[in-house]
Image 1 (tube, rainbow, N blue to C red):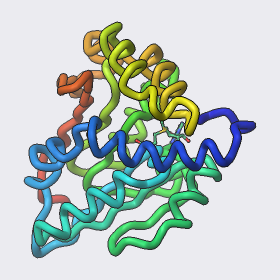
Image 2: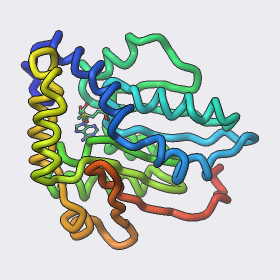
Image 3: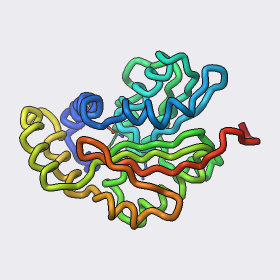
Image 4: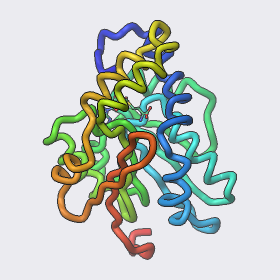
Length: 223
Ligand SMILES: C[S@@+](CC[C@H](N)C(=O)[O-])C[C@H]1O[C@@H](n2cnc3c(N)ncnc32)[C@H](O)[C@@H]1O
């Protein structure tokens, strides 16, 4: 997916297929219930940033869950890849969701702040130094909490994905890129070593990691 020369038809099908994969396997419904929903309010609008949002399906889904729960949430999905941004903005708009072509560093330079900052399947695209930069940016951008979700590397995950995603193998990059992504992803202990003090790594099912930074207080002079 990162290849600027990737076939556009295959790439756009991949954004579509990731919508299904994320819904079934990425575990964000649970993260929403445990980590996001308790921090939202029906009377005050909270803001959430999805960094590296790709096709934007999670940004849309999170806004939909909050709306269904009667909670006020504005979601901003950012991705530096023009093809991801074009795909995300071509789909029908969803209330409370906007997309920008940007990365975390440019948002920091603009002085932007969000109550919650999250990402899905971004960490394994970055080298160690880029992960540290992303975490530093996330701490500057977030007022209340940061939640970076990703795959957990394991031989079993790779084998399961190789078989499970076979039906997608010719139709999109999901099968091929998924196997590379699993090989590139972290184990819990590796991520824990890489993250600075204050961050914690939680393991989830199936083969999931959630890197969390709780910044605490609800009350904030800037709100
Ligand atoms: C595997 S995709 C995941 C997309 C989406 N979050 C999902 O779960 O389907 C990773 C995305 O991260 C974006 N990305 C890579 N490096 C980035 C960075 N430094 N800042 C923000 N996004 C980045 C890529 O453009 C790509 O769209």
